[in-house]
Image (cartoon, rainbow, N blue to C red; front, top):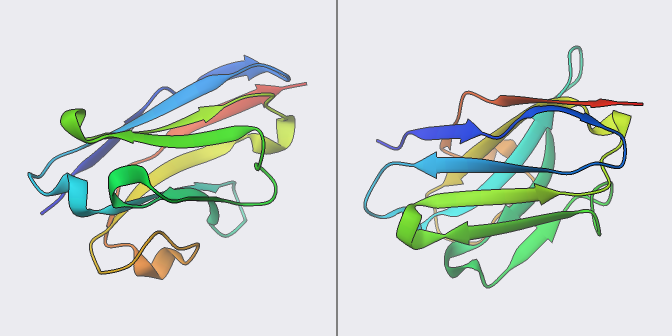
Length: 125
């Protein structure tokens, strides 16, 4: 069983920054690929960013490329996403997810095995 707890969400003005954290339980955290997704009311959950085990590979949605950076600290069992130059359209509930199967992160939410409860990010214009 893996438990994921996100934190760091909040209200920020357009152009501002936030850093989300996702703390994971489990001694084998370092072997999981991790992903960040987001969802707004009435829309499907969408992929934001992903990072492989060891952090050697990262991938991003086109909408956040160049503004968001995903990273991980395996010693702390934590994955992060640094979000810069935030836009009102980034407003959403952000979720982290753990992928236990072989292979790197994907943009397919069905490939992820465990999810956090989400943290709200609101960007005002």
